[in-house]
Length: 275
Image 1 (cartoon, one colour):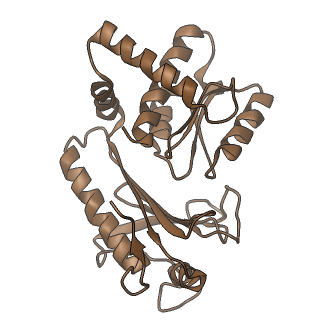
Image 2 (spheres, helix red, strand yellow):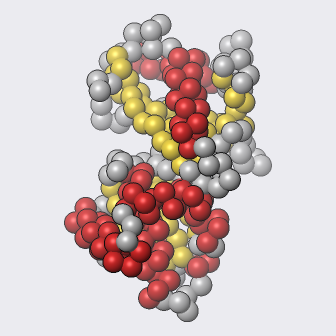
């Protein structure tokens, strides 16, 4: 399992445990948290199950602080995770805790086997079958020249014939239109009525998220500690879209096009991640 798949399983398990132990508590006062580069699966589940989902910036300092803020407001935080294998199961420790996550995963595996005779993989498929398939693709390129990185991202902000504050509208010659753009370097978010980002903005880092009309969400960002430009892509499917293999092919096609059209790895002499 990758971090997003484990997040889906542990998030489901957190909800089941909470409802079993606290049937009198309203879901509207319950929250789950994930970093913005992680899968949106908890948000999808929240919409159908009636609890709340909150996104934060990358890193458990943001998720831990958000959890503390919610707890101070008398809300119940059930779970938080990040795709890079970080999980906070309940608020006993306001940080990632691999030991407790491993114990909960083992307990869940035993419960599923004993009660339903299914594996974790089968449970994950049940989650996708009910809430919609969420497939992800994460990778990066190495770039040791800061001016090149700045040029790549500034091009995306001046995309329409060099006109300022214009972003790409589609990929593959209009085949996949872009619905929203969020730029946490400049504070732009076209999904908001006022066009301004809700999450904290930092001019010192590069981070742009594109949301496509077909459900693909991809974040392009720099690393704060390494000479990397990363991408985090997720195709969010509807429950009635059962052609999961085809959906994966669409994800691959779109990510390849985004990399070529937005990062231009050959032109910018970027070094791909070694498999």
